[in-house]
Image 1 (cartoon, rainbow, N blue to C red):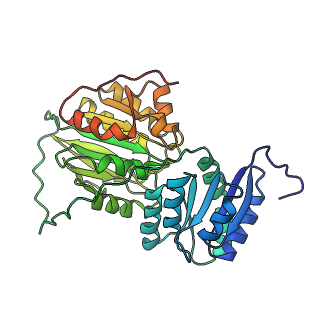
Image 2 (cartoon, rainbow, N blue to C red):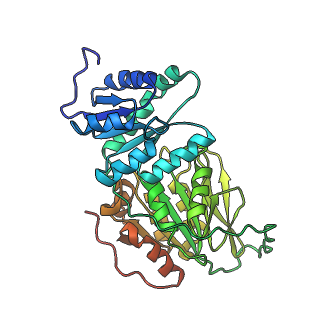
Image 3 (tube, rainbow, N blue to C red):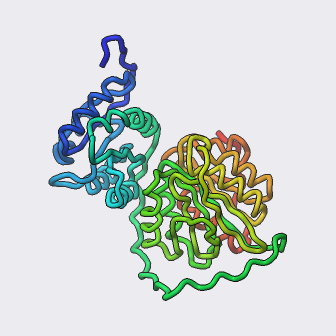
Length: 375
């Protein structure tokens, strides 16, 4: 730490677990230069880490996933079951790294910090600002021990060829098709799995924005597809929104809902970040308000910041049903709280009830309760 820097009165206590001595050294040096962060320890593997952490428990854990003796995911599951702690996963930005990282996010990690395979020291130093931001956000999160997952559904049959899409009716043709739009960020990988795996195959078409880096969303959607009865996949430009299918916006691209006659489809497009995000929940929700209106249900879920709140308000003003996840079940209550503050959400529901909300909505049933004012 610079001699001119004064430590914060209550610095964020960080513990680093990585089998690379270089990674531990560089990350410790980068973080120690920040007055609001204190590295209280480091270890080469989870078993050494646990002994040290029991003496002084960290506020945030920075964790590699591929380590000797005990892998990071097994360690994370143990931590989340015994003492849920905000954890950030260090991962290489590769296809294999994405799959492993998603397992970690499903196990309860609240963030992902990507590191390069080559030029490791330089890349870590360049990315230290991103890690510091993630640590600051993680320290404000409240991870939960999630209920045990139900066994995955039977393997889905793969059709020999995709069925032909019905011809679109002329624009302006009335439609009663319903659309569900979900927006989430920190804690959303776990939360979306809880919701989607409880939905039946006849549920309305679903469009999703989960704040996630490029190259991770395809693996995320694929993982959800293996544990859900409905089909889940990363959205492609001009994909049709249909019952029993959830489309996840690709990382690094925005996704918008459009309508052609009585059919909905998505546009996947580039563009500037909105609310510091790409994909942005606001971009999706505003398009749903414009093209689906009263035929839509909008759900804003756990996440930091305010992305999606204004879009949810636009949905409500267009006649859509709108819901916010409640504070007790959120890892971070930022996005739902902002939506409630604006009057965008008509009701709040715990995570465990959101799938029921979607099912009731698909059957035209009214909600059980109305929203209270944001506290």
